Amino acid sequence: MINKISPRLVDAVSCIGDGASVMVTGFGDSGLPRALLDALIEHGATDLTVISNNAGTGTTGLAALLAAGRVRKIICTYPKSSGADVFRDLYKARRIELELVPQGTLIERMRAAGAGLGPFYTPTGYGTPIAEGKPQQVYKGRGYVLEEPLHADFALVKAYHGDRWGNLTYRLAARGFGPVMCMAARTAIAQVDDILPLGMIQPETIVTPGIFVSRIVRKDAH
Image 1 (cartoon, rainbow, N blue to C red):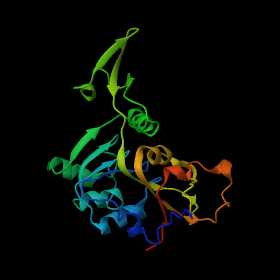
Image 2 (cartoon, rainbow, N blue to C red; image 1 turned 90 degrees about the vertical axis):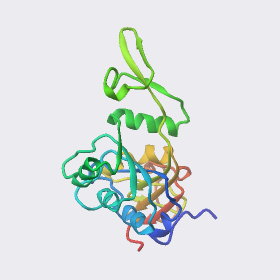
Image 3 (cartoon, one colour; image 1 turned 135 degrees about the horizontal axis):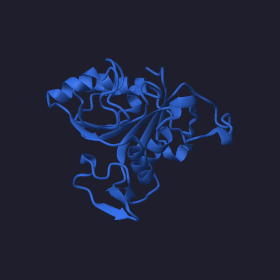
Image 4 (spheres, rainbow, N blue to C red; image 1 turned 30 degrees about the horizontal axis):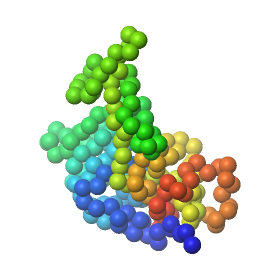
């Protein structure tokens, strides 16, 4: 019987080891899997590479993971969003590495990884420092830069409803990067508001099929 439910949040993230690459959903605070991030801090994994849209805000969630000294490198689009004081201080002290990726390029790199595709050309970043060291081409008068698919060992995802097979739905803007990160990561771990009995989620409302999800846990399963 397929049952991907973890009894506790810390059990759900127990497979994340030192040095892992971890995708984290969220557009600011919307869609941020705070419960899983707190569990990851408790679990103790370190030397992590985090892939996210931003670098955390305030002192909780992703910012708390950074403040705990668990992140070696972050790959993101908006590292200096409002309230990103923890990242700013770490970066100024040279205690964290940064790879800056335009938002559209970031999600397309993840989509390519999830779809099993190879590198692709995009006009975004052509002729800028972002393109340094990457192949560049001009096609029909327009410049393009070659970008690589972006895989990860794990994805931490905030969803709305799930079932024991790992099928997921999302709520409004919290959907964000969730579907593509589940596909791009080798192991996707989802926190949900509720775990429903199998068959209670209508097939046409499932956004992320369970085949892309390895573990599922309620957000209050402490």
